[in-house]
Length: 250
Image (cartoon, rainbow, N blue to C red; front, top):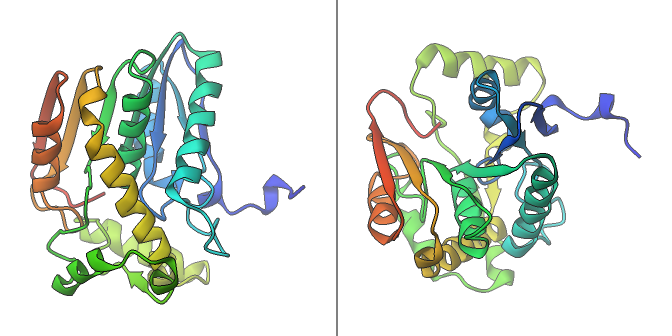
Protein backbone atom coordinates (compact mmCIF):
# COMPACT_ATOMS: atom_id res chain seq x y z
CA UNK A 1 0.00 0.00 0.00
CA UNK A 2 1.34 3.44 -0.93
CA UNK A 3 2.54 5.53 1.99
CA UNK A 4 0.42 8.64 2.44
CA UNK A 5 3.62 10.68 2.63
CA UNK A 6 4.26 9.81 -1.03
CA UNK A 7 0.83 10.97 -2.21
CA UNK A 8 0.86 14.54 -3.61
CA UNK A 9 -1.09 17.00 -1.49
CA UNK A 10 -3.52 17.77 -4.30
CA UNK A 11 -4.48 14.07 -4.48
CA UNK A 12 -5.43 13.72 -0.84
CA UNK A 13 -9.02 13.81 0.32
CA UNK A 14 -10.03 16.53 2.76
CA UNK A 15 -11.67 15.64 6.07
CA UNK A 16 -12.67 18.04 8.83
CA UNK A 17 -14.33 16.51 11.86
CA UNK A 18 -17.11 18.55 13.42
CA UNK A 19 -20.65 18.09 14.63
CA UNK A 20 -23.44 15.75 13.61
CA UNK A 21 -24.29 17.77 10.49
CA UNK A 22 -22.12 16.70 7.57
CA UNK A 23 -21.36 18.28 4.21
CA UNK A 24 -20.05 16.20 1.30
CA UNK A 25 -18.36 18.26 -1.44
CA UNK A 26 -17.22 17.08 -4.89
CA UNK A 27 -14.57 18.74 -7.05
CA UNK A 28 -14.77 19.60 -10.75
CA UNK A 29 -14.12 17.35 -13.76
CA UNK A 30 -10.50 16.23 -13.69
CA UNK A 31 -9.91 18.39 -10.61
CA UNK A 32 -8.91 17.49 -7.06
CA UNK A 33 -10.24 18.01 -3.52
CA UNK A 34 -7.80 20.90 -3.20
CA UNK A 35 -10.29 23.02 -5.16
CA UNK A 36 -12.72 22.76 -2.26
CA UNK A 37 -10.24 23.38 0.57
CA UNK A 38 -11.06 27.00 1.42
CA UNK A 39 -14.80 26.37 1.27
CA UNK A 40 -14.35 23.26 3.42
CA UNK A 41 -12.28 25.19 5.94
CA UNK A 42 -14.93 27.89 6.23
CA UNK A 43 -17.71 25.36 6.77
CA UNK A 44 -15.56 23.49 9.28
CA UNK A 45 -15.07 26.66 11.33
CA UNK A 46 -18.86 26.84 11.61
CA UNK A 47 -18.85 23.42 13.27
CA UNK A 48 -19.80 21.14 10.37
CA UNK A 49 -18.16 17.82 9.52
CA UNK A 50 -16.86 18.31 5.98
CA UNK A 51 -15.66 15.63 3.59
CA UNK A 52 -14.11 16.26 0.14
CA UNK A 53 -13.26 12.86 -1.36
CA UNK A 54 -11.21 11.45 -4.20
CA UNK A 55 -13.45 10.06 -6.96
CA UNK A 56 -11.38 7.47 -8.89
CA UNK A 57 -11.55 8.22 -12.58
CA UNK A 58 -12.94 11.74 -12.17
CA UNK A 59 -10.08 13.01 -9.99
CA UNK A 60 -6.99 14.24 -11.82
CA UNK A 61 -4.43 11.51 -12.43
CA UNK A 62 -6.62 8.58 -11.33
CA UNK A 63 -7.67 7.29 -14.76
CA UNK A 64 -4.38 6.65 -16.54
CA UNK A 65 -5.84 3.81 -18.62
CA UNK A 66 -8.97 5.82 -19.52
CA UNK A 67 -11.33 3.04 -18.47
CA UNK A 68 -13.64 4.70 -15.94
CA UNK A 69 -17.19 5.82 -16.68
CA UNK A 70 -19.49 8.29 -14.98
CA UNK A 71 -21.20 5.36 -13.26
CA UNK A 72 -17.88 4.54 -11.59
CA UNK A 73 -17.60 8.14 -10.37
CA UNK A 74 -21.12 8.02 -9.00
CA UNK A 75 -20.61 4.67 -7.24
CA UNK A 76 -17.58 6.14 -5.47
CA UNK A 77 -19.65 9.19 -4.49
CA UNK A 78 -22.40 6.94 -3.08
CA UNK A 79 -19.85 5.07 -0.97
CA UNK A 80 -18.55 8.38 0.41
CA UNK A 81 -22.10 9.48 1.17
CA UNK A 82 -22.76 6.27 3.10
CA UNK A 83 -19.54 6.73 5.07
CA UNK A 84 -20.49 10.27 6.06
CA UNK A 85 -24.00 9.15 7.04
CA UNK A 86 -22.44 6.82 9.60
CA UNK A 87 -20.88 9.84 11.31
CA UNK A 88 -23.67 12.40 10.92
CA UNK A 89 -27.40 12.64 11.53
CA UNK A 90 -27.91 15.09 8.67
CA UNK A 91 -25.96 15.25 5.41
CA UNK A 92 -25.85 18.00 2.79
CA UNK A 93 -24.18 17.43 -0.58
CA UNK A 94 -22.61 19.89 -2.97
CA UNK A 95 -20.02 20.36 -5.62
CA UNK A 96 -18.24 22.56 -8.10
CA UNK A 97 -19.06 22.34 -11.81
CA UNK A 98 -19.14 18.62 -12.69
CA UNK A 99 -19.07 17.92 -8.96
CA UNK A 100 -22.44 19.63 -8.69
CA UNK A 101 -23.81 17.10 -11.20
CA UNK A 102 -22.61 14.24 -8.99
CA UNK A 103 -24.27 15.92 -5.99
CA UNK A 104 -27.54 16.40 -7.87
CA UNK A 105 -27.47 12.78 -8.99
CA UNK A 106 -27.21 11.75 -5.34
CA UNK A 107 -30.08 14.06 -4.46
CA UNK A 108 -32.29 12.58 -7.18
CA UNK A 109 -31.46 8.97 -6.29
CA UNK A 110 -31.72 9.52 -2.51
CA UNK A 111 -34.37 12.25 -2.11
CA UNK A 112 -35.24 11.23 1.46
CA UNK A 113 -31.63 11.07 2.66
CA UNK A 114 -30.08 14.26 1.29
CA UNK A 115 -30.97 17.28 3.45
CA UNK A 116 -30.01 19.96 0.94
CA UNK A 117 -27.63 20.96 -1.84
CA UNK A 118 -24.83 23.48 -2.29
CA UNK A 119 -24.34 23.94 -6.02
CA UNK A 120 -21.36 25.98 -7.26
CA UNK A 121 -20.96 26.90 -10.95
CA UNK A 122 -23.27 24.09 -12.13
CA UNK A 123 -22.34 22.85 -15.59
CA UNK A 124 -24.47 20.87 -18.03
CA UNK A 125 -22.06 21.76 -20.82
CA UNK A 126 -18.84 23.78 -20.89
CA UNK A 127 -19.82 26.95 -22.79
CA UNK A 128 -18.11 29.83 -20.97
CA UNK A 129 -16.36 32.68 -22.77
CA UNK A 130 -12.94 30.95 -22.59
CA UNK A 131 -14.22 27.77 -24.27
CA UNK A 132 -13.43 27.61 -28.03
CA UNK A 133 -16.53 27.80 -30.21
CA UNK A 134 -15.60 24.60 -32.04
CA UNK A 135 -15.84 22.60 -28.80
CA UNK A 136 -19.57 22.31 -29.51
CA UNK A 137 -18.80 19.92 -32.37
CA UNK A 138 -17.74 17.38 -29.75
CA UNK A 139 -21.42 16.91 -28.92
CA UNK A 140 -21.62 14.66 -31.99
CA UNK A 141 -19.03 12.19 -30.63
CA UNK A 142 -20.63 9.13 -29.01
CA UNK A 143 -18.19 6.27 -29.70
CA UNK A 144 -15.44 5.48 -27.20
CA UNK A 145 -12.92 4.73 -29.94
CA UNK A 146 -13.42 8.22 -31.38
CA UNK A 147 -13.44 9.95 -28.00
CA UNK A 148 -10.03 8.42 -27.20
CA UNK A 149 -8.51 10.50 -29.99
CA UNK A 150 -9.26 13.80 -28.22
CA UNK A 151 -7.59 15.77 -25.46
CA UNK A 152 -8.83 19.12 -24.16
CA UNK A 153 -6.70 21.78 -22.50
CA UNK A 154 -8.18 24.47 -20.29
CA UNK A 155 -7.17 27.97 -21.28
CA UNK A 156 -6.15 30.90 -19.13
CA UNK A 157 -7.51 32.32 -16.85
CA UNK A 158 -8.05 28.75 -15.52
CA UNK A 159 -11.22 29.79 -13.71
CA UNK A 160 -9.41 32.33 -11.52
CA UNK A 161 -10.17 36.03 -11.91
CA UNK A 162 -7.70 37.42 -9.35
CA UNK A 163 -4.47 37.94 -11.31
CA UNK A 164 -2.20 37.67 -8.28
CA UNK A 165 -3.76 34.39 -7.21
CA UNK A 166 -3.57 33.05 -10.77
CA UNK A 167 0.11 34.02 -11.03
CA UNK A 168 0.81 32.40 -7.66
CA UNK A 169 -0.83 29.17 -8.84
CA UNK A 170 1.14 29.10 -12.10
CA UNK A 171 4.43 29.73 -10.27
CA UNK A 172 3.58 27.00 -7.76
CA UNK A 173 3.16 24.53 -10.60
CA UNK A 174 6.50 25.55 -12.09
CA UNK A 175 8.29 25.24 -8.76
CA UNK A 176 6.84 21.75 -8.38
CA UNK A 177 8.09 20.78 -11.84
CA UNK A 178 4.60 20.41 -13.27
CA UNK A 179 2.95 21.94 -16.31
CA UNK A 180 -0.31 23.69 -15.49
CA UNK A 181 -1.66 23.00 -18.97
CA UNK A 182 -0.96 19.30 -18.55
CA UNK A 183 -2.61 19.31 -15.15
CA UNK A 184 -5.79 20.83 -16.56
CA UNK A 185 -5.93 18.46 -19.53
CA UNK A 186 -9.12 16.37 -19.92
CA UNK A 187 -9.11 13.36 -22.21
CA UNK A 188 -12.00 12.85 -24.60
CA UNK A 189 -13.51 9.85 -22.82
CA UNK A 190 -13.74 11.81 -19.58
CA UNK A 191 -15.53 14.67 -21.32
CA UNK A 192 -17.91 12.30 -23.10
CA UNK A 193 -18.74 10.55 -19.82
CA UNK A 194 -19.39 13.89 -18.19
CA UNK A 195 -21.85 14.71 -20.96
CA UNK A 196 -23.63 11.42 -20.26
CA UNK A 197 -23.70 12.20 -16.53
CA UNK A 198 -25.16 15.65 -17.15
CA UNK A 199 -27.84 14.15 -19.39
CA UNK A 200 -28.81 11.57 -16.75
CA UNK A 201 -28.98 14.32 -14.10
CA UNK A 202 -31.13 16.59 -16.24
CA UNK A 203 -33.65 13.81 -16.91
CA UNK A 204 -34.14 13.18 -13.18
CA UNK A 205 -34.10 16.64 -11.63
CA UNK A 206 -37.82 16.36 -10.93
CA UNK A 207 -36.97 13.78 -8.24
CA UNK A 208 -34.93 16.24 -6.18
CA UNK A 209 -36.86 17.26 -3.05
CA UNK A 210 -34.43 19.03 -0.72
CA UNK A 211 -33.81 22.81 -0.85
CA UNK A 212 -31.00 23.95 -3.12
CA UNK A 213 -28.74 26.98 -3.22
CA UNK A 214 -27.05 27.82 -6.53
CA UNK A 215 -24.03 30.12 -6.75
CA UNK A 216 -22.81 31.00 -10.22
CA UNK A 217 -20.44 33.69 -11.56
CA UNK A 218 -21.99 36.14 -13.98
CA UNK A 219 -18.82 36.11 -16.10
CA UNK A 220 -17.89 32.43 -15.74
CA UNK A 221 -15.06 31.58 -18.15
CA UNK A 222 -15.91 27.85 -18.27
CA UNK A 223 -19.66 27.58 -17.71
CA UNK A 224 -22.05 30.24 -18.94
CA UNK A 225 -24.67 31.58 -16.55
CA UNK A 226 -27.33 29.87 -18.69
CA UNK A 227 -26.38 26.59 -16.99
CA UNK A 228 -27.48 27.91 -13.59
CA UNK A 229 -30.67 29.43 -15.02
CA UNK A 230 -31.55 26.12 -16.67
CA UNK A 231 -30.98 24.26 -13.40
CA UNK A 232 -33.12 26.74 -11.48
CA UNK A 233 -35.91 26.32 -14.02
CA UNK A 234 -35.84 22.51 -14.06
CA UNK A 235 -35.71 21.93 -10.30
CA UNK A 236 -39.09 21.44 -8.61
CA UNK A 237 -37.78 22.00 -5.06
CA UNK A 238 -37.13 25.25 -3.19
CA UNK A 239 -34.24 27.07 -4.93
CA UNK A 240 -32.22 30.16 -4.09
CA UNK A 241 -29.85 31.47 -6.76
CA UNK A 242 -26.99 33.87 -6.06
CA UNK A 243 -25.15 35.51 -8.96
CA UNK A 244 -21.51 36.42 -8.23
CA UNK A 245 -19.99 39.45 -9.93
CA UNK A 246 -16.33 39.31 -8.89
CA UNK A 247 -15.06 35.85 -9.81
CA UNK A 248 -14.73 33.34 -12.63
CA UNK A 249 -15.45 29.59 -12.59
CA UNK A 250 -13.50 28.80 -9.42
